[in-house]
Length: 243
View 1 (spheres, rainbow, N blue to C red):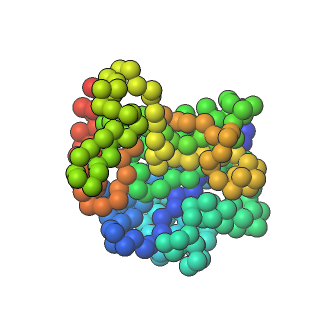
View 2 (cartoon, rainbow, N blue to C red):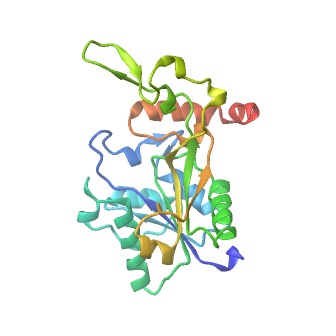
């Protein structure tokens, strides 16, 4: 049973953001963005421990104030624009293991995906654990709708458009006829720790998809995203009723 496994949730939130300064501390519906994934992880029944990985004291204090552990501060070289999330996860695992704390599963959450819920984390963990015979990781995905590549076009030097995938527009199919595709969205990333150490990524041939609705896949890259997500938070009940 997965309840017998130790699950670490890492909320990754660095201080720097060139496109949206202090983004992780910006408020959404009265709470800083960093507080949202912390609350989701703390509310997940299957998560054993929730930590924050950050280089920023203010972010660390904000996360700590809502219940996250701050067992270390992230080194500067892992807080740059070029540092990868995978390096951040590995650093967290290595640091905690050196402190005598080992885990069976690791969950990565980011403040830029604030609509992830505790139920999503538990459901994804349960799905992964039930499918360990064929999978070692699971990541959030969302169905491609308006931006399906079937409807992408090229534009030539004269400004005229041609289909990207088809030889001519007459071959374009109706939405009901095209293959269902998904995109990798950032709501959650989960892996067996042993597999993460082996692959050093969440993405490989043994990765499952955890499908989320379009509204949950929205990410905060700029102030416009934040405004849209705040509207969703305030009208969430209506969205759920529409189903």
